Length: 174
Image (cartoon, rainbow, N blue to C red; front, top):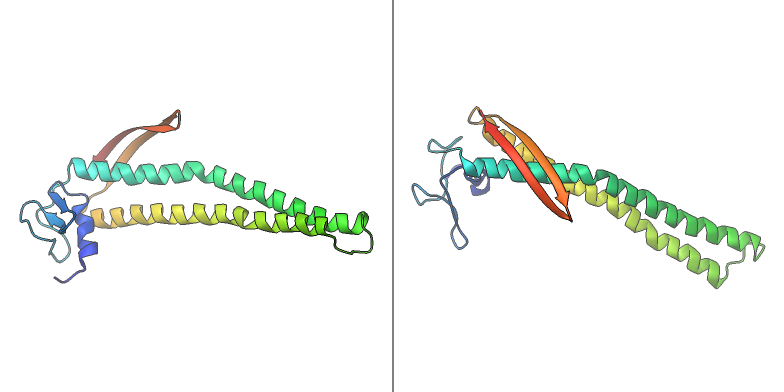
């Protein structure tokens, strides 16, 4: 086998002939063998599995994009909370207790502020990580389809009803 199995199995994810066995892994439903080809598979069949996979990763990307403002809002909220406690503790030290002498109450306030700071930056880190994964999946899909001279268009509609996403999609591979 000239290419690594992971790269070749990317072709199988969009093929109607995919046969996956948990103990064996990815294999072709036509040959019952693991994928083994140079650049592209001569037996690939773009069908429902391709459309379902395109829908799946497109939904993932869209949900990450929709959640962007939630992540940014979480960052801003926790940053404000953190800075309020830190600055409040410092001001309390200077104003009430005078001469900058730290007391337990001011240390607790500043400590709470410092504990909230990682939550703020954690929200941004989570968003960036999810976005990077979704973008990478789309890139890999596009690269794989390009090997076959294929492109796709998707009309995607996601409606959230009581916390459950209802998805309607129309995929065209050409």
